[in-house]
Image (cartoon, rainbow, N blue to C red; front, top):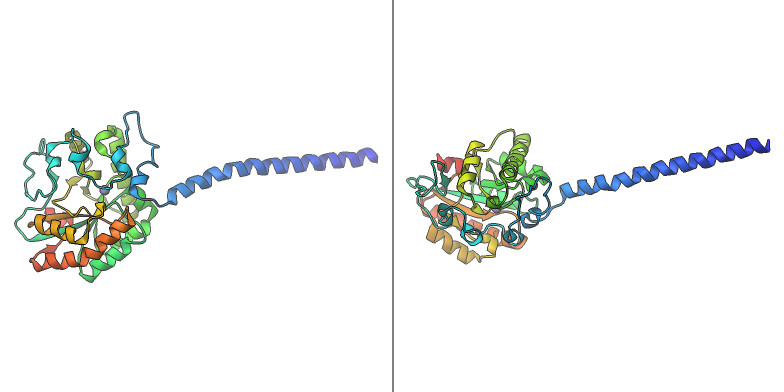
Length: 304
Ligand SMILES: [Zn+2]
């Protein structure tokens, strides 16, 4: 009898040990998964995002140090090896891309015949300010174009849908805003195609327009982007909103640089302060542009 009780006791101890052991093993797996989940949903400005996703980076990949602080930089400040035609993009309102290598154009503006203007908002979406920008655009019954970063779009698919549902155009602005001239060809392809797949999954269609991060694109990049079915779209009017430019100064840039077919660069994500600053001048800007007799259209419409 004593032996029987001892056996029961031994079995109980073993059972407790086994159950506890499994729980510990199970628990040790869990945080890894939840960490990954958190990583997927966290929000942070694009400058930081560029450093999160290195899962696909290859040997030749380098992160441009400028990405740490700047959202959109002048290509000529960042890399001398970038094509000359990209170095002239600010203020270049010429409708023809005179110095493009090969036959693949980088579009800076429309044809310059009709008084059309396109507002473009880069680097989003995010959930706080983007809906407010959409409300401003609705107030003026304007359709604009949003060049989205795939990582941000993946975190805010509802906002992405809202932009599209309200009639605005969505453009591909890479997956993580890496400086394309300094990453490998397969990484470039991945940056473009990952965002493309997300947009197809959420919106059900391929967008035909791509804006390279920082507006920086080399000749061989153009061939790649073209082969993937995209028009390369930069801008002719740079508000420099990302740099904390005052509303008054932004208006000066618009007045100096806007010509028929003008494509205006702004940002709806990144630095809350600079985005809010841009939003505070946006109605004034819209009203002034309209007073000059311009009609607001999307990128696809202005390039038609
Ligand atoms: Zn950008």
